[in-house]
Length: 149
Image (cartoon, rainbow, N blue to C red; front, side):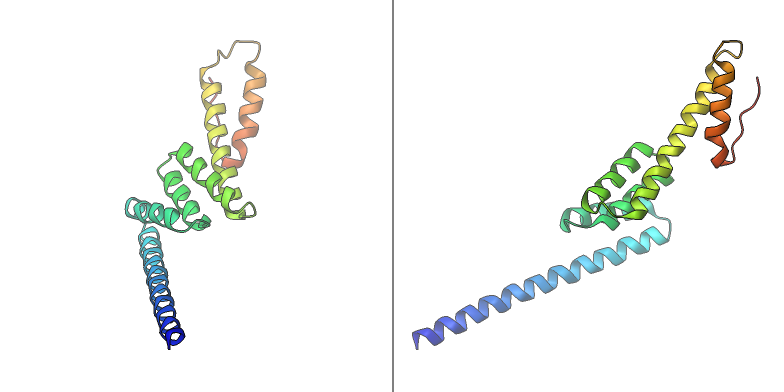
């Protein structure tokens, strides 16, 4: 009889644990859907709050980190975007979308740096022609051109 009571008690505990885990999974899925809806609507401010919560809840969630990076990139906060993409890659090194987006924002930062360099270097300096050539090559993939001084 004591074994039967112990067995029933253990089954009750396991059932309660299982129900709690089911609720946690359901809440996480609901949060994911809500975050994705905000993101799809272009409401990054609301999406960011929910994606950050998901990242803390789900230890291997690289998709939410990608979306966090995308929201930061849309607002041209490239440092925060880069950090989010790197965190996504630390969770999934083979995540091609994170690699692509990381490379893209780094290229955008490089393009801005080169354009600023071109704009601020004396056009009569010895390095001016080298700088102009570099600026043209770096800006070409972005369909940007530099203005001659």
